[in-house]
Image (cartoon, rainbow, N blue to C red; front, side, top):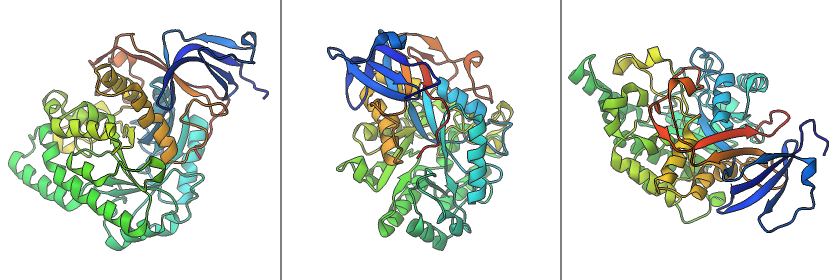
Length: 437
């Protein structure tokens, strides 16, 4: 193919792909992988025709596909925007993202969805797709979604901003029955959360510690809502993906006896639920206040076990920035969410270094499985003919997360002060942006 980009050869890397680690070379022509040659094999291509990237001692991974981010564009861009957050994402090895609909205005119509694609085409450093949001009264818009262009439908079965809490039983039934593509859900039972909130407000007044967050957004609230979503999916034969699971009890809802391509009900965990526990609230405070809440150390261990057992299919971030001023407010008025896309891969690689997860499993859950689950063409693997969205990793380079190297628009990270022994160089070897399909 003729390309405006120079041909590149990534030479001598340890290629992590499809449950295998092997030393090899990757030839790239423009935006596509041309050939993958492993040690001992011969190529019919001539190295002199390529710009060589010496990757000796480094590990080469497919670009991370993050199926859950909030880049805040449009309408909340004082916190973040597609330009800043996609730049931070690529720096952290995340080369594709799927953005949530709770912006201003909420993405509840096809026209508003198309506006977000237009913004991304002008601002994004990475590949992108956007969810259509669900409300109690937009089923007529949901059924118009083209599954070849939109990653999924997002349903908040728990608190959200604006008009996006779906609590009408008839509407939920209609969404699960008629959604033309995968339905992704935030599961927390609203009634349970509000009852807990009232209880703890009476107990603590305005001076509440962040450590009560998992008592308000409790394991009971999560399990009740997740169980309801699974029941609806089974009733209607819906493709259901439950986001940011946080409890040990919920793991019994998911199957590991069939392949991902055959599953209709799938599961995601976020990096912060694998990294932090309720023991960290006293130190980190509102900076690790997410919904659903980070829960106990036992829950954290159960989630990692479910990843290893393939009950959980995808690892993502729920990247959701807020300003330092907002996060510094008292617990009850501080918003939930935090930035993570720049540090998700290095955090998982640190768990690998600690012997808790294999490198191949990290790639499976962050690269291969999102591509399978969301039916993304020609991404998520290191294969000839696939887009060359690639990440080079140095597993021996020590560095510490600090404000000076944080790229998020909000200028902070819950990982500040953490030393990593892994450095990541993510890059899209592409001439232009491609919408996820």
